[in-house]
Amino acid sequence: MDSFDQLYFFNDLRRISKLNKSSFHVLPIQNIESLERSKFKEQYNYLLNNFIKFEKTITQPFFDSLVCPAKQLKLSMEMAKEVFGTDTTLYVTCGSSLSNQIAVSSLCNKNTKVLAQKGIHQSLHFYIPMVTKNITYIEDIEVCRERQATRLDLDSFIKALKDEESKGEPYDTVIINSQTYEGLITKIDEVLECIITSSKSLKNILIDEAWGAWTSFDEGLKRHTAIYNARYLSKKYNVNIVVTHSAHKSLFAFRQSSLLHAFGSTECVKRLHDTHFKLHTTSPSYPIISSMELSILHANKEGDCYSSNSVKLARDLKEFVESNLTLFNNYDDESNSKNSIWDPTKVWLRINDDSFNGSHIRNILFDDYGIYLSRYNKNSILFNFHYGITDECVRNLMKALDSIDKKYLSSKFNFDGNENYNGFVIPYPPGIPLLIPGQEISEVIMEKINLAKTNSTSLIFIKEEEL
Image 1 (cartoon, rainbow, N blue to C red):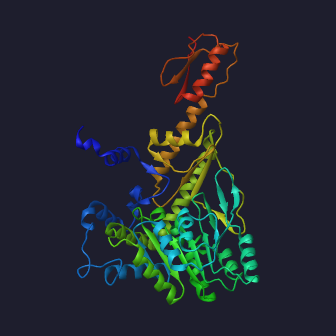
Image 2 (image 1 turned 45 degrees about the vertical axis):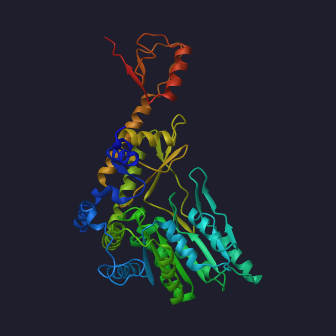
């Protein structure tokens, strides 16, 4: 075997990269073409085309260190602090799971009593018990079982806080989720103050806003974000609030880019810095940090324009589906609740035929059209319209869905077992006709046709013109 053949990950990633034309999942930077209209285009192109120049080990005194920043990194994180309006913002190059661990470790100790939303990220479920065993989870309210869409049960949260306060055993720390991949945005402006005022003993709040970094820069949505509301509520009620962002999910940052934001006391900020020092790698990725810095400035200057475009493109897809397709239709969501709204950049499509399922459609989109999506279930598929989605991405998606729809329509012929169909019925593969012109459609033929509808990539009907 050639040694190069054993580059299993390397070679297959190259192969998949050739197939993949766009991603309606994450990593806006993967669809780098959308930066063509950005004033930051030149900087991004330089970073991507000169990667090795950023992959350095040089540190103090010649450069800076993330574990003890004093020069460039310090200035960069102070820039991020100013953009987000925080008391401190820290870079994490090992993903939001580590950010969550740093946040939990800095806010909690073995005596901490935690009230947490069950719908928080798995990393928080893993880390909290490592610090304290005194945890109560509040079950989320189910909004749509099929799509696993849930939202915060604010009434149960408030009741739990008040009940424990009245018994003299109050919770001092609350952990909640802000936005979900399934498309629900918690109105933090409606929720956070209610939580804080339900217990005088509350000291710390951790908000996992991993999917929501982009909403901090959207003029219509930012009022609902953790960042926007934590600015004044922390000072008003003397409560420490820490917010985590998975930057690569919605901004033009490299994979594993994460941001830790803190609002609160000097002691809280110091603990966060100390815990960041203890838990973060001493060999951070300089390319990731560079991409994070770029992504923050890009979002600050152009984020509202990019998010508006994402919303418009998502709406264009919905209108196209409504007007043109039969196999798919838009998921009709309930109206927004008091405490949550539907994310306008998430598009769920329902599949109208049981012979197809989400996995099947997902595979067709990637294998035949190079379009990647992540979330699906039996009867629906989800498209995430992030900063990286372009007009061309959406045009290609529309063409793909239209092509799938036409193949679906062609397979919807209904035969009467006693009538002759003057044409061919051909499953492909293998491309061998089940029915030829003039052949009687028997029960056996119908069974074969129905089986082929389920098992074949496509079922082709070609009707012969009468001479």
